[in-house]
Amino acid sequence: MSENAANIIMENKICKDAIVSELQKKKVHLFYCLECEELAHSIAAASDHITLQSINWRSFADGFPNLFINNAHEIRGQHVAFLASFSTPAVIFEQISVIYLLPRLFVASFTLVLPFFPTGSFERMEEEGDVATAFTMARIVSNIPISRGGPTSVVIYDIHALQERFYFADQVLPLFETGIPLLTKRFQQLPETEKVIVAFPDDGAWKRFHKLLDQYPTVVCTKVREGDKRIVRLKEGNPAGCHVVIVDDLVQSGGTLIECQKVLAAHGAAKVSAYVTHGVFPKKSWERFIHKNNGSEEAFAYFWITDSCPQTVKTIGNKAPFEILSLAGSIADALQI
Image (cartoon, rainbow, N blue to C red; front, side, top):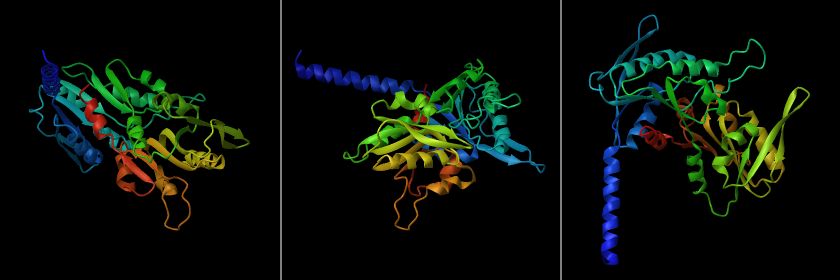
């Protein structure tokens, strides 16, 4: 057999395998909460195997939900998913009501996509009487009924504490994903002249992410208590002359990131940026990072967040230094697992 003929056979086999792989992908019917409408459309645009479905989100006069799942008969025997956003306690009940019903509509399988697990930072007790609401939320999710296909799959991105995976009961199958590949892809688009170093604001962030970013030099900061204050200091690494990117799972007030930036700049960092998977930003705390048009040097060159918190994305848009790295493609892939 000639080399040319062998190459043609190999190309045909690769093409055939690709076609078979595509045919084997499951068709998924994706429902979503109102907050996640834009993200849901982006997910559907990322895959020909995802069909969007709708829910009538209404309320009775007393404020309690009056909900209706459209096309309930058509999804029997189909793979179904729900894209949730537990952004405030007020919206959780209505979404849980839908989430608990969908698996019972004789669907082939059910997947809950909850990009941001909101109570993840409240995972431990420091004294008797503390309520670890991360465990409470995990118990709520763990009680989703099984579908005809078995336990519900629960897709969560960059959960705050690694041990929280053990908070979920055996009735569900948690799938823990990460937004870090979006960041590393963005790194590749930066000028080649920039030497990127990854900084972790504390040991917790280092434990969560260092293995996913081991191709980059690292800097680790730490918090030490001085009287009533917690001071950020450089623990290890040298940021001098580099573009340093602070990486963490989430941001609330942003105080730690700001203090880290000051420490890194004081140690000679040429530029400082930040990445967090979940931009929570209560009380518009994102405003602390916005570039002002006053000609002064800005503290953060870039601030990358994902669209795991839709309300934040809607508010911030792409105001500098913020850039949105969408989870849509990653979620579309996760729905095929």
